Length: 61
Length: 298
Image 1 (spheres, rainbow over the protein chains, first blue to last red):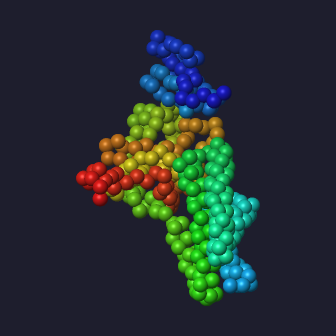
Image 2: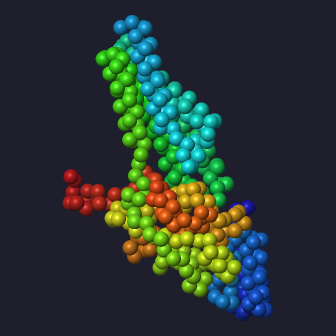
């Protein structure tokens, strides 16, 4: 299946800011947030975009 | 005229035509057509085109008018060449780290078709010259048509239509910028550092109003990225979509912000490479030629 322009995952430290259909990863610290984003980016072949300091999304382009 | 001299006339035409194809067939930095096998295909097609062109004149002289209809067969044949090239290149494009894009591919395919017609024309004129004037004028005509074919071959390059300047790349938060042009959002700091280390930015300033529309064409932009990556290498792999060369446009004045990740990091060389990217036929627009803007028909 070829997915184009889809949010594959949401990584956040602020649980209350996010919800919805994509898998959500809740982190406790900023370091964890960076680590999760880096790993997920590599695993999913997507790009990690920063929406704010607390919310990252992995997008398949 | 006897069959002997026809044979010689046709031979002259075929040789001139095939030579024209040989000269216009260049495997340059793009390495396309691929060495040897790709070349053999196109040389053979060139030979066929030349034969068709050369045969047309004796056929007409012998009042065999129906024979000219096989020229239409030739036209169909060469349209197939274009299809063949388009299909091959589109297939191969999926596996390029930085794809050519369909506008570039169409440009390449169209020139393959076009050059076969030039070959036919060269053979046609050379044979005609041989039959009317003799072998020496025919040789001259052959050389002239080859020169004409070469001049048709060279379109303009990007350096003719834009000014190229090196520019700094910077991050504002997660946003990557070339000069003041926003390129993309890079979330992870490691990636940002990589990009600042390996990335380079260039600004292409259009020289006039027509150029703005030409370089805004996404196919033209992709062609720039492909050519730069093909010539200077690219710091990218299949699993790193964040490391992607990109071009974005300044909507205010039509400048292009070019963000690239070359392996050879030489600004002057890169400027040269961007400057020699061909201006794609299909991307060229001429808004100033619009007759309705000039007050009706010319």
